[in-house]
Length: 287
Length: 287
Image (cartoon, rainbow over all chains, first blue to last red; front, top):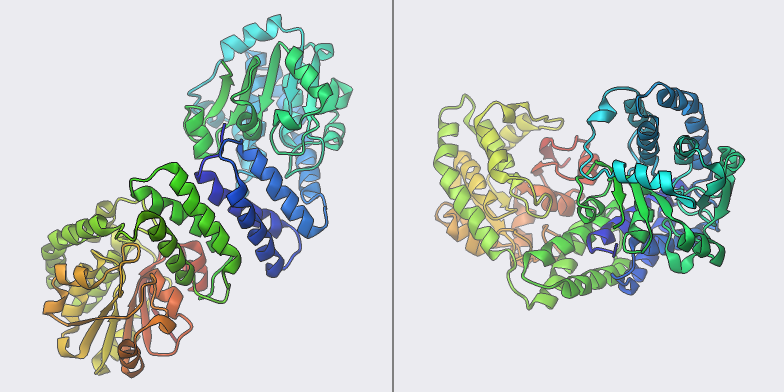
């Protein structure tokens, strides 16, 4: 997905929100916004939005001394999600269609997305999973039947993680897919926003069930031209790719491969691009 | 009121919305956003936001050939508001406190504000005036008693208009103040967003009841350093100033004078500054 002009004001907004997360004064915040503004004329609308999100992340870190801004937020997300894990597993155990429930859980975990909506109380959102409210969320595009068929046949599965915390929900889905030796989980190479990196995968015990690799990317989306050769090899050979979150959708929606995009549509521009409604839960096949 | 960092993403958003109003292509829209971005490092946070809104208006016009972008929207607003005028007058006629009702009508007219909320259906908002819904709107700051007293004593009243269309609602209040020879109405000097200029005052018949002057300003707010000498003389000598809308509040909240700000709080930053809640109707005395 390319960058739309509507994304630009959002870039400024998220840069300010990131800057404010750190103990910094308003003068520095203004300097960060000025640098983001200076980068705007350089944006090519042909690139996916995570390209600019990567630039913003670098600008913020340049001003703040290259700290992992979201470290504590990520640890907190991991901790909270792990505390929910037994309930999530129980929900799967007592459901009629275990795989479907696990898919829904993985998508539900995508509300843990600091970049898109900071004010939303994640616990309230997750609680919906355990009531009827989650079942009521619209699913305009939900290619579950195809997904189930492709999963049965798949021999090489690549799972692209999105956020810290969310990966505990991914763990539930990965465990239901029941082919641990055929699955590789890819995380970001370096901290960017609250995206999951190797450390988060370890904190959440993902490395105990599947092979975990870095995609090589330090953007909040799997932009292939930044990926490592090791990752690209796996990407090309995979017969099923599970792509979590909006950032990965933005980066990969135009790429080849048997990709299933799982995310919650939290941004109106992405929702329109994916032909779904804002707020939808989405399971979308790439072709 | 100074410019807050939260205003910056809003500047980008409103520039894009303005650009899209005109039949222009995306390449031009991007060029406009690039120029607005280039202006951001030049913003002094000490200036009120209408200063930057004025810059944006100039950038947009430079790209679009200095057209009066909102001409048709303003004419439409004036036409619709004039069609409501008999009902507004009736509402005043049959109310217990005619002045209070006229004040409420003048504030209700402030929803006709393209800059702050483009999608809101103005007619639905105005219809609330004629039901109980308007009475239910919160008024955390509503200095009506002071306003009434000051109005009784006032000999020189300066009324600062805000938007086209809205001035028909102002007309209702002006007529209730019943001192037409003591009131001067000031409009913007040149078209800026959908703010009322002399032409709008004439279209709405304001010039038939009071003296109408230009403030000299082409910003969407009465920034005193851009005002004409004639206006400043009136401003200094006025014993009561009625300031309509958010733009005038932003420009004048720190200025001296017996100013009453009448507006609907449509922006969270302004609401916080004025100590009211978002959505409130506000009648706020300046000191």
